[in-house]
Every structure is written in structure tokens, then in C-alpha cells.
Image 1 (cartoon, rainbow, N blue to C red):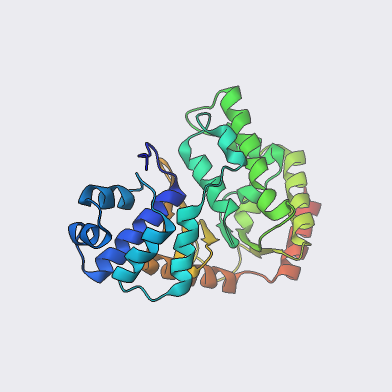
Image 2 (image 1 turned 135 degrees about the vertical axis):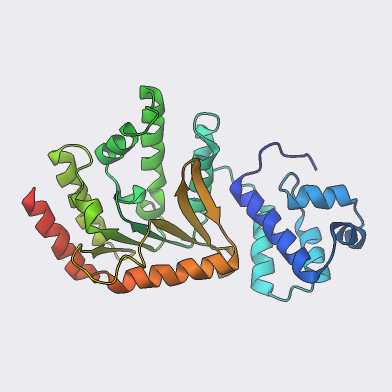
Length: 283
């Protein structure tokens, strides 16, 4: 099997999970290689995402590692067999790899939840709003770079507006709704889009008013993406160099709790729509 030069985040997730299973079994890479009848270098390449692994070998490894979670093993087998080349491939070499990884993560998601404090979540943004957000980047983007990012962001909306949308929930702080990204017309159109999308059965929009108590300890921007099984969920956080993918079980549990706390202090969907209506009338 050929060695990859730049594994995707999805390929790296499979590699990380296999390494975690081996560590949990208390086996060294050399011992795992002996059980599989391959060289330690090959195990190293598999666990670093540089090489793929067949479903047959993956299941043998899982058996040697005494993993009895059948649903999890089946999900890993799907990861191992995945050869998807999605729409985001057209941006390869044009956008940073993190953009492609986010698109791939979206494509395979079973559900998605966003908590937004300063900006409306990307999937809910209008074209003008997205363009204004990217225009404020430092260092400044060239016109070509700007248009690529806007076009890519609009294409990502397929997961909630396409033929097979996934369940989506966004909890948005009032600050993000009041901050004018772009001109007044763009702000009004953005609120209108939120109201329109919030009527869909698979989309839930909740608002956190500034006046609510007990919010600061629970709130921070985050994206929680559901995997095919809970152990393959992923949290995405913005960091100075791009996006960080968080996937350890302890951290996932912490973010599940954090989302529940934020959800508990937010308005229900109907009052949230009323709230957005009032803000729109103020513009």
C-alpha cells in the first residue's frame, strides 16, 4: 500500500483510534506487528495515518486488542474502507487543508451543534455576511482568496440545505446577532435567513440574551460534530493557526456537558424566533 504524504483528518482519526486501542490493550507496536504478521514500521505507518489498513486487518487488530464494541469496530471498518472524493476536492491546493478537513467532517456527520458568541455560525451565514467576515481577516486576503473562502463556505451549507440534511442545532448569543457584520442591509438579511432556516424541522436555533444569568461559566464558541457512533464524535475549536479537532473521550464528555449547560440557559426555539424578529425590526 502506498504511503500518504498528507493524511486527511478523517484518515488521522482512524490512525489515532487504532493506536488508542493498542495502548488500552497494553501492547507495543512491535507486539502488534508480530500478531498481524507485518513489520513494526507498517504498524507505525498505520498509526500515523501514512498508510491505510484493510478491513480484514483492522478486524484482526481489534480482536487482538480485545475490543468488544462491535458498533465501534464496524464504524472503524467504514473509515478504513472510505474512498470518498467529495466536492471539496476541487479546492485542494487552493485552500488550506483545514478547510477540506472541515468539509469532509461535515459530509460524514450524523448531526451538528454550534455555539456562537461573536459571529453567526458559518452554516447559517448569508453570502454577504460571509464575505464581510472573511474581509476582516488579518493578514488581509487577496480578492481571489476571499472569493474561494466565500464559495467554499456557501458550498458547506449542503449538509443542512441539501437533499439529505442532518439534524442541526445552533445556540447563538445575542452579541453575535447585534454585531453588524457588513452594512445594515446585510445585517437585516442575515437575521431573515436565521428566521427562515429556523422553521425547518431539522434545524433548531436558540438565542442567549445578554440579560440571562449564569451564562459566563458555560459559554464559549464550539462546534460539536456527531460521528457514526459517539466514540467518533469530534469537537472543532478555532485556534490561532486554524482549527483544532478534539476527539479524546474525556474531552468529548466535557464538551457534551458544556453544550447542555449552554442549551439550558438559552431560550426555547419559539421565543428565540420572537427575539430575532424583534432585533430585525430594530434595524
